[in-house]
Image (cartoon, rainbow, N blue to C red):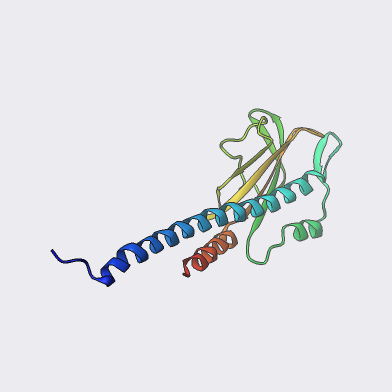
Length: 167
């Protein structure tokens, strides 16, 4: 039986471990990129929800969003994405009323008053989106939701994958 050639030994002992290490590194980069991109986008959504919450007042026994249309346009501006919001008053477990925003944003499945902040991934107008729902009980119980389509997030992740593929 003859010994394997030098080429065969190099492929087996050098190139194969190198390819395995590169593949594992690429997987780690993808998971980390997904985590940190998600955190950054989620934080931006939550900041928008907190800003909306700071502008909810009670007037004549009814919740009001005290932002002008210009303020809302500035808050919801994004060059590449669609951003939606909704503010719902909660009267009891089964009774809600839309105070402001888009009625297309419905409550997340996992939402309840015990979970003050819930993130999920709904479809909004037929597009995948990321949404935050924020429960507040002052001045009266209400839920604020801010959703953003996910194209830019997905593009950023795809770019990170492409760059991690380079050896």
